[in-house]
Image (cartoon, rainbow, N blue to C red):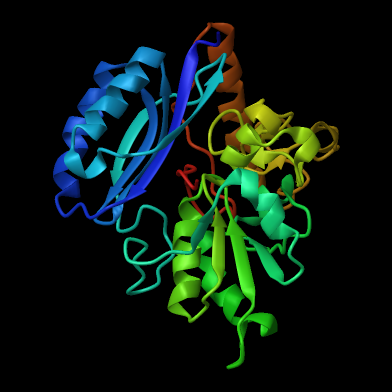
Length: 322
């Protein structure tokens, strides 16, 4: 049995005292050797944590001791190596950012469709299937026939929807099915569609991860791998880790063919970003990679540097986007 249990979780629930929850939750995670990222906001909790099985289960028990989180769902997977190297509990305005005033998934969302029933829904030719994830996620895998909005962040989705002729007009609105990694982005995207007057709106309960866990590969309409926001980078059917490695410069998931590109320099650049970094930035990234390799040679994990964001404009770390 692999040594590290990963738990992905989220729940939309009114937490007016969310700021007061941060320190006790962080202390519980640290006491149980659990690492990852948890986001707290007035609208709920979202995150992914990993560590020894007993530690992760202790944190889940701690969270569910709050009556508001008593039914907090989570999804599990296992890994041989720790998916995270530090623990963060962050206070946010939204647990997944969309920036649509008045949108409240606690009030209304689309109709949940269980993984076992998803294929039947997609077989309906009148259903418009929309992948709500970011471009780099869609690039390595999606459902057959899904529309790719080609967005770089989830906050771009409302504007993309506004620009689609098939979703506009005063007549009968089409049936819409939406999906994302673990379900949380679809809570907001389907709530947005309901806000805009769409009656038949569906989303995949538990997201792609639940589908890959429960639907056999021979019955699947999923193509490729699913990007995940931890050191596994991608998973396939049965949640088996995929072949991708993260470019530490731009965070694009790279398959073996992309790593064979002459533009790929481990820790420094890949075909997606080699022309977006200045010589000074590449020099800093090369030094960072050298320090990482030195740490690995000593049997340590180098966590002192963070990677540039996808547009090169600053520093960012991936946050849970289930």
